[in-house]
Image 1 (tube, rainbow, N blue to C red):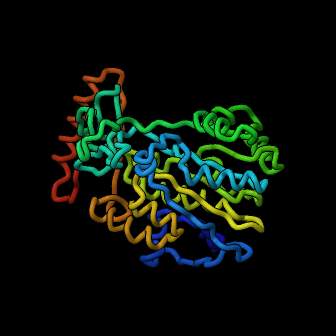
Image 2: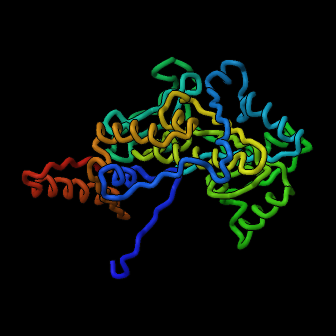
Image 3: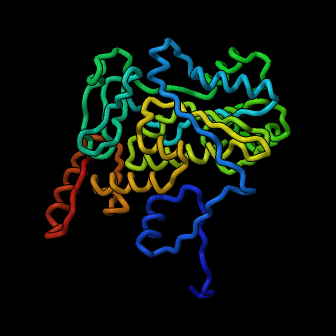
Length: 331
């Protein structure tokens, strides 16, 4: 304000809040319609993991992704495998039909606690963990588990000659390790980089022509209303790592829910299509930026005392709110 300066916020995947402000005229909107150097966007294919299970493939790598990886290694090109673990919170889903256990009130996934109980972190709704899928009756229902070490092991078994690098919380703990791994991959000291969301943010590797997003559902079904937005952002950013050099790029997204609008929009790399569906969902559920939401977190060494205090707090809020249009969820 003092210097009359302008603030420019740049993103291929702006937050729903920021884009909403651009739509109502609070922010000015400037669009970049072509990729740097007019390079084509990568070709994206979506693999339905339910079909992989039906075909007898229980590997973390789908048949299509494995085939495309083989082709890249033969051409001496590089591959990135991205495990989408952001905000991971132990949701329960069916591997046969893709059904996810969700809160009936808040439409966010239920989190698994002590292996037997499912809990909503918004309203406190609780239910038992099912033994069979309530939709299709399949016994293949349980926690969604995958890790970068497990993926690296599978890759080494499938492609023994291929050099791998892994980038996650464990391998980047020591000072300078993050930069060393990226420098080694840029120098083509490895053919494949396996990692969490830290590998998809803004890196430029011209020899990467294939990106595999192994478990899109891990961020799609977190216990948070922003899960669709975060998934779209991560998948679109991951896709942007492929084909940044002279050779065109390809992306394979593996998911149990290929029809979800966040998956479809990221595969098409179409922000407007995503925003249109997401803002409707936020409006329907009363989530920001359509309505305001405030989280009150309380902690206490005595759980009984904590529960009593939270109930008193809720009753107090309801007593003083008067005519205000206010809903209290939880504790």
